[in-house]
Image (cartoon, rainbow, N blue to C red):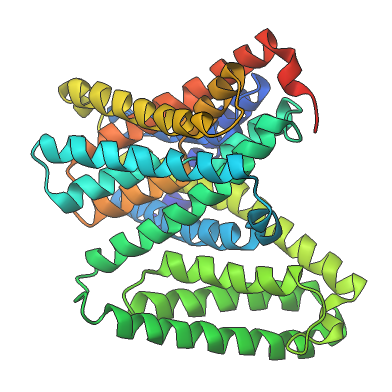
Length: 407
């Protein structure tokens, strides 16, 4: 076989293996993303990794980067701004305390351990982000999405996502070697790009929607994401923030009623249905085809020998991560009427870590900001807490069925 055929065969084998592992986890009622994570880790086994060519690894790396880009675009498209504004006081406090307390505790612990401030900050942010998608998926499977704890967890997840995006922006700006004195100017530059993209979106939508073409809509969405991603990267904010912003711009047009800036054609029933279908198509393509390669690449980078070598570090960081999240939920409990069973479900829900934490760890490792030991520790903590989350939440719902009452 020639080089291209060999690479394609390798990618196909890795993809099918990842899908099979994911389907197994779905069959035992665990989130699909957990199957992708485990599948990726298994690909990182030394005897599997040894059979991969450099060309295959390079292809997986490219698909991984593309997957992260589309993931952040999808996050921007799916952020429910209306629900964000209407988030309950409990959700706001759980999300706020649930992010800030583990951030502070993790940062302090890493500094005391002798790590630099920037490295400590990266680890702290990675340990503070909650996997809202994983949480929502399990709540949906357990028919707990519309319960009181479900509403609190989803609202808190939105707050957590906001903090996470802000922190990733700061880390990417510092990683790119930005002079902080120039940051305001670059921010203004990026704001101008966003303003221009917003104006362009209104004009383009006005013209391309006359034909009510799903292909034109989808093509424009991808082109807008790539253009803003490139602009954001050039200004030092990173392409991920650009992709997220592009999703947010389209999100605003999708959710708002008719305004002077958005012609009536934007809100015809056919257009709304096309936009919903486009977002769903992007979600299916991203989560089913591209994102698995991100976790495969993460697994390739994962070094199993470092698990044993860094076991005390992994156990210590896991304890800090759990303490920080449960501590944050406990602070929110002190100010709200949250029962102990609700506290347990919300605490474990906030402890689920996923894609954003993995992305941050991967960015930091690729940029040589953290060593393989810390990288392994962050991935291990995310794996441990995400595996534990469904088990304990299911147990609490079984012990306290009243928590499943819809509100």
